[in-house]
Length: 232
Image (cartoon, rainbow, N blue to C red; front, side, top):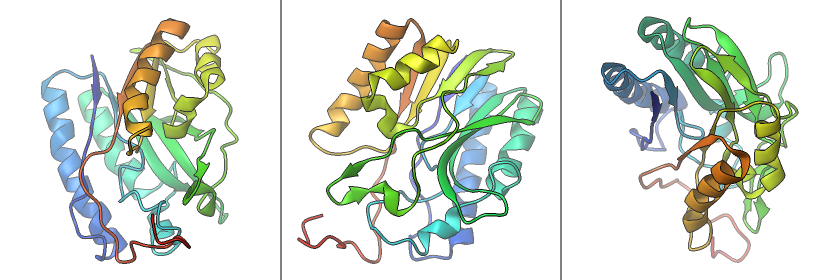
């Protein structure tokens, strides 16, 4: 049984980073318990679930302070105990800070049902569309198209913007994926209607299951307008 989680942020974006993240952790913990009651085996959270999706602001700080180790960070440790307790594979898309480095990645951490980090996938494609340019924060990933063999099937993660690239979906299939998760953060007249269509099309074309997750809620930031034309 597969589950996906959509969550809105909890604390105001002006609050300290640790308080914002801890508030989300508390909510997610309750949702994971509910998923366990429903006998979910594989659970995927939304893109950058630990933080507001501030990548449209073009401000690096304080938002990069949410970045953490994929293997040893507080969010991974938080989820590991649930994965082990509930015999559940958990996919955790976070903002990653590479160990002993200042490199930042948009990363999905896969935690197996024994509570161990199975591996990770870094976002292959990032948007550079008008004012929405994620290269301000991180670059394209370097992990290829990994498929993670779990006790509940072979799973992969196609993060957000990668859904626009058919060959991205294809490679996960060629590598043996049976379920591909697509955690996203998308809005707008063009992009929002497309994300569900793209997930269904990918499932048909590549003969695997897809699970598409979009963020929910309204997020406001201390400095809303950062573009030269003040339209975005």
